Amino acid sequence: MNSKNALPKLEVHMIPCLEDNYGYLVHDSDSGFTASVDTPEVEPILRALDEKGWALSHILNTHHHFDHAGGNLELKEKTDCIIIGARKDADRIPGIDIQMGDGDIYLFGKHEMTILETPGHTRGHLSYYFADSDIAFVGDTLFALGCGRLFEGTPEMMWESLQKLLQLPDKTLIYCAHEYTASNAAFALTVEPDNGDLRTRNAEIAKLRARNKPTIPTTIGLERRTNPFLRPDSANIRATVGLRSATDTEVFAEVRTRKDRF
Ligand SMILES: [Zn+2]
Image (cartoon, rainbow, N blue to C red):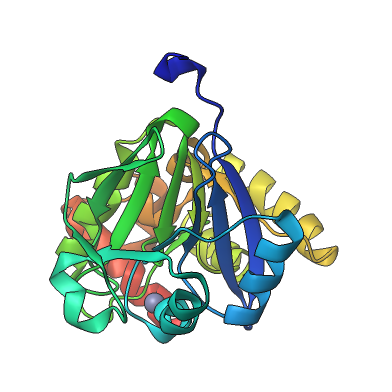
């Protein structure tokens, strides 16, 4: 009936879970589909579904860690939903039904969902991008002012993943899986103290957190201007870490190492 352009945008509902995780429900009013992006904790997800009057149709797993896939089997048993996850990590995603890899497209109702492999934090990490709604779920790859720890990957691998996300339009809303923004901001200021956008953002973050408000979603544009892990070409960062003529990958790796020690 309607052309694709007339599709209503997807609705995203944030669910604080555990210590500092965010789960998300993505709802398509057109098809009635509802996906849970990761399953950090079953009870709050079921409560949110109930409050919204939504029925769970899918789980979209970003990676295998327990605070992302720990609720898979219980939710699948209770809702009969379909679990989507990384082909490369199929043996570590509980209950996986559909295995996805880089560039795959899945139709969520009439919404195209593009799969981006973004390894580094884990070797089979996926990000989910819905172009028509300008939203991306990036798990533990990209955080507001941060990036995931390199548990299974190399700096080269993570830098490549982050560059993939940098190719998304600036307006893309980024939903990451943890509220780490205040401590990320404190670190960011140590490596790029002269970034005026970062200083402004740091003040805004402090205000939000003082009222216990989430700092998520962020956008690709804002991260591009302020996130030190996306800015290895910054002269200020290069001067701070003493790598004026190194490659971007080398600067990224040094910033990541410094954050691990921060
Ligand atoms: Zn993780």
